[in-house]
Amino acid sequence: MPKVKTRGPGRLNKSVKEAVEYAFNKVNNGGDYLLKVANDDPKTFLALVAKCIPTAVAVDVKHTIDLAGAMLASQQQLKELANNQEIKTIEHEHVTPDSQTGDNETRNTKIPAKPLETKEK
Image (cartoon, rainbow, N blue to C red; front, side, top):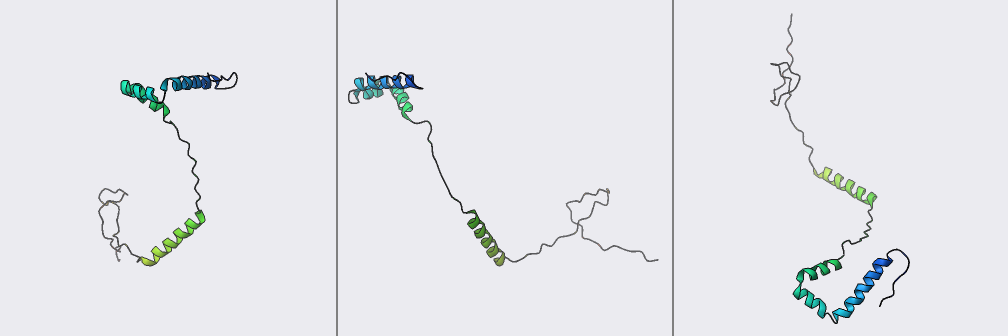
């Protein structure tokens, strides 16, 4: 029989686990018991398999980034793009407030700008 811990946290869990392992090893006898359970009671067998699969995996990932190098590379790429691009001027028409309603909001329709007319006296 396995030795049972008398003190410390988890002593009951460890002793129960050791007792179950001891009994299982006595009954299993080369794996025949598990084969019998798998064939006779697949639900119980799969429950045992599920208990063997870890529920959490600890992963420690370390990644080093050369931020200064990345910024310099980005600036160089922007300079190259700027040198290869034509500067384009976007033509547009002047939009005036709605003269019919007196609203100061502009409309979506474009109205060509007219020079101010002055009255000569």
